Image 1 (cartoon, rainbow, N blue to C red):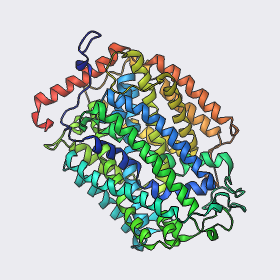
Image 2 (image 1 turned 120 degrees about the horizontal axis):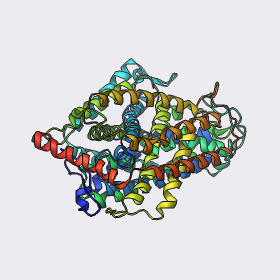
Image 3 (image 1 turned 180 degrees about the vertical axis):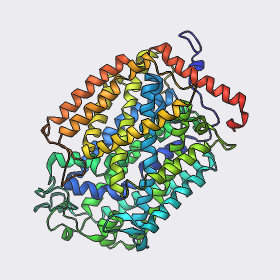
Image 4 (image 1 turned 45 degrees about the vertical axis):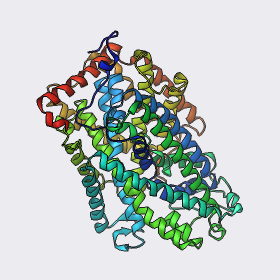
Length: 573
């Protein structure tokens, strides 16, 4: 264990078996590839259905919210560049009990996303191969489900070539993924219809959503905008900036490259998504908007929004390119998320929440058992969540639960480990960190009660599985009185958010029979969530582990690394 006066280099957690073969560009593209995926193909349509032309505000709000969280992750990743970082920062700051919960949140959100991207491929591929997707029900057919599993298997196969090859493949895909949206933006700007920004008339019911619309720029007011932030997949689209943190154990010079990768990728993604929404609204044929936004009824647009829009605008070649991109973009995102899922499993095993086999690596530095687990779990998530939007809501909720651990961990480290190296130091941490926590709580609230109660069931199942695994591990993390005190705020926070959501205004998609009560009025609910978040933030700030306990946790991971390397040198590749 490192002491207060010991070498700081001796007080840093270490990883075993992973190889630092990814440079700055590869790190940026690992995050960017996760950000620009199926979201850019679908979310502009769903956001318009939720908020009309004012959907542009939803993208700005979502981008600003996630950017705040990205700054927090940039400091943490540079401070502790370890694989599966989002699962391990809270473990160091609050001990094993909190770490178990945040570890599962991290794994759950990561494992969901590869299947989401596969669904997007099936949805767009229906244009050429109708037998693989049922547009009426919005789900893949039996053949489509089989091909979805084949796609997941291909992600796994490519990952076994190692992080060096994966970085090169992902970088090649990423250039395509970035250039095609930019091409679409430039071309569609020449189809500008200024009147679309104030398209009038009554807003009709679209796919059972929003019964009372008034047309115009903001047919459903501020609530429609906030609905779109989460419900339309906007926050989901921005997810992925933290991928550089998840792969931190394999990035060269991580102290400098991690912050640059996280913040740079987020800024690029925000620009692309906002501009895609602008051209989606402005380039729409006004004849398609006889009832005003969100009165979109054209089957081509509903089945493939951006490609359908290009086709209606007479841009046949661009429409074809976009339908090809509808395979490439989700494929690249699914590929990198299967990678990060395996690294989170690796991190959970390093924390001794999962059996130690999941931290074993092969000669290429690939955690092979964690990779297989990621594939099997991804296939399992295909069954209870058969549509893109149904799994997006769950994924967003799990992701934001994962994100709340970052601002809490940052302030805990600032308080307990003030002298530790911080290659990137976030300014105004005592202001931005609680703000980031409030923002994350609002995103959870806006996910709606329908998504949150399903997420709660997944959390309980995960706790049971991890509990069983730990029961058979004689060297499991310390789960004593100090760890209980340090983590006591977390279940209180989750229960409190559930009660606020149940009594709040956001159903999370259940329009016909919503489970929430609407007892907390709109505009009152936001300060209620903010006040609850500040109470929990202050509690967690003072409840974090003391310095010596944090360094014990770090020392445990160092000793495990040394033991594994000594007993089985082949594990280190």
